[in-house]
Length: 224
Image (cartoon, rainbow, N blue to C red; front, side, top):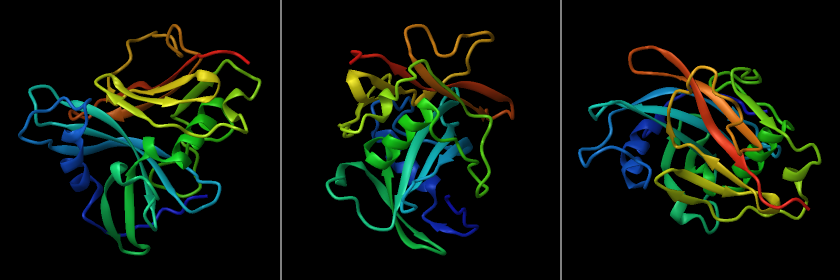
């Protein structure tokens, strides 16, 4: 169970992301830089209790039309070997000390727990309160054979592109994260056509409206 500490972070998460987001291929803003606000998200627990896992939703009000982004982050007490390219930045935590914040799509602990969430083996946790499930986050997976829990699977390299981030999954499947979030039309099917699983949730628009949309979808590969 992750313990949520009420303390200061220096720099803050939003300050780190203000510099990092414009470096991503899926970022829609201009060279002037984002104007970020926290808009939602959820957490997952690391079974080993060592890594903080957060799916942060932020909105950027710098452009003509506000944009929402899904930003999975992991927080570690020491650098992750071989992940220098995935480092978002370091922060000083008022309780835990120095924390290394990583793009969670490049962190094998987050990838494993996200696959477990899709398959229903773990539950999303409230972003701000310890040991409280977030029942607003929904998921599905139409495979019941434990395919995403394949014992020999090792997380591969995540691929960023303008449509989002693709994560390799067992049996050739792909888990695509929707980095740029869009409200789902009323009555839209979940998972979307052609997908075999999904994760969805809600966030707040700059005008205060609460909306729901797709966070991730599982696209099938071969069946073994």
